[in-house]
Amino acid sequence: RVTKEVDSTSKEAKSFLKQQEKRQSASPASLPTVSGVKRPSGMSSLLGKIGSKKQKMSTLEKSKLDWENFKEEEGIVEELAIHNRGKDGYIERKAFLERVDHRQFEIERDIRLSRMKP
Picture (cartoon, rainbow, N blue to C red):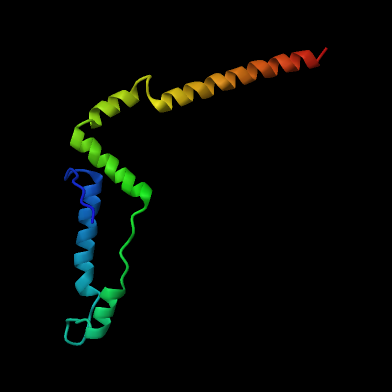
């Protein structure tokens, strides 16, 4: 079981509260019976509880969860955000290298085309 604390004004918290409200309002209306209360039958209820499978967490999900918890425990969330925003960020470096590679390719292409024309 995984617990996650979020700000009460965040989108995730609001969507969770809406889901809870839908479940509460849908539950009594979706189970109409003669007496007005539906009771689960004994054997099928027990088999349903035993036979239900728990949702497994993948390795990637577990790693992401562990990383998020580590960042919160160490208090490095803001430091990482600042570091990744600057020129030292991985994404910025990759984008820069792709631009340089593309420019070099265009220069080499222009040289090849100029040699072929005469």
